[in-house]
Amino acid sequence: DRYYRPAPPRVVYRPAYGPGYGWKVGHRYRDYYRGPIYVVNDYPRYHLRRPPYGHQWIRDDRGNMLLVAIATGVIAQYVLSNR
Image (cartoon, rainbow, N blue to C red; front, side, top):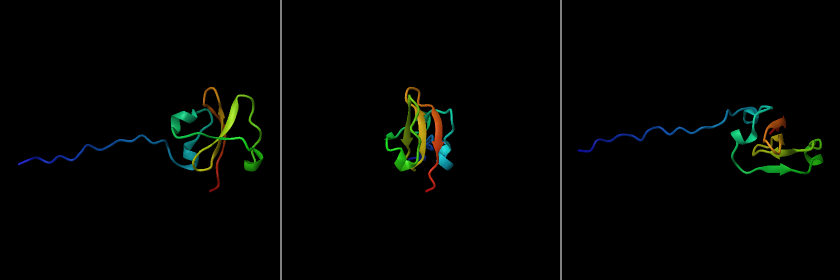
């Protein structure tokens, strides 16, 4: 007779989901999301202001816009999508 033991539970880390994946000003974008990065260059289309020097607008997979520092990845501002 063989003893059947179920596999141990798998633990998967996921960031705090909710409005905007729980984005917070001052947190690092890369700590939350490890997928591809979609840089937004067409600011008027998304009703965004031109980013300050050293920053860029990034769009996540839900359409939220994040103003992120290029060198550090720190979120300076975010605009949540109303989808």
